[in-house]
Image 1: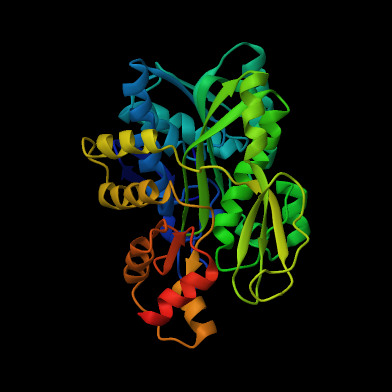
Image 2: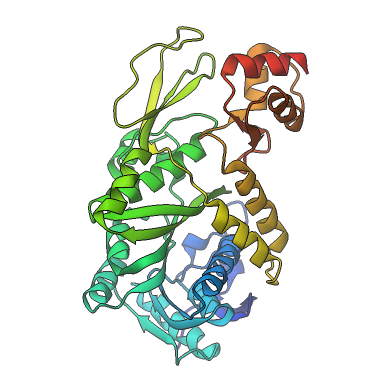
Length: 395
């Protein structure tokens, strides 16, 4: 393979990867800009890839067999190659529509000696997934990690997954999902965003609900195993179950959030009906967001398994993953959306106390309360907003 640009070899996990020379693709702030490169590679997504390796290893243990995995948007092939080297894999399918990326993937597959289990394609991702599904080639894991929105790839991926397979989905287009471009969000994600301090959790729930909507049309139930927000992206791992009776259970997981920007009250409403009452605490107008996923975004059992398996693997981001998963586990039994200490204190003219002190005070009053992984100054609770403010005022 001859290139018109310099390349370098990087090491990530057990993989050796040839990439364009990263220092040649810098933006105005002298930082590396992945989207400027002829072949996409983002070192900032290492935690994402480490977590995916952990998830695949957890599946290996649960199923006690090798996995068939597909990464239809491969870039350099780093994620797929790491799956092949660091997990028990029967077959790995790597693909990219870019002819340059295709050449890099083939070179990297050869460099890592995985030609016997790797299939490399140069096709449109959606078309490839549909082709593979039509040939009855079903996968245990399909990893959708695009630059931007994953929407167009969801239905083809659902068709190519085997029953109880896992769909991994990343979205990086947080501008529409966080309410800057409302129409774009409604068009792509089939729901209205909310421009608030907890907009990234809303974004995650909009993403899951969009996938749920498409899954329901094919009589598929989705079960979120691990879902999280990290830096510039949101990510969810969903297990699917085929069958109309199973899928019907997910109908109750769709809902609306009504929010009062005057006092920070919010209410979750199951179903598709907008709550038309005014705020019960300050009589302010309520703004709605949705429809979105109002069910759990983490499976406690699966999260516990991942925490245990993380201790056995020597991943670069082991400590960060442990912190993230333990916070997700603590968060998993708490209601949707969180409160921000600084925001509430700015409203009540109070010096912000420690987040943990607020949580402990609410727990002493027999309310559920705990941290959120999204915001170090955030906490979740089932306490009403007036109780939250009273607790903060007394600290």
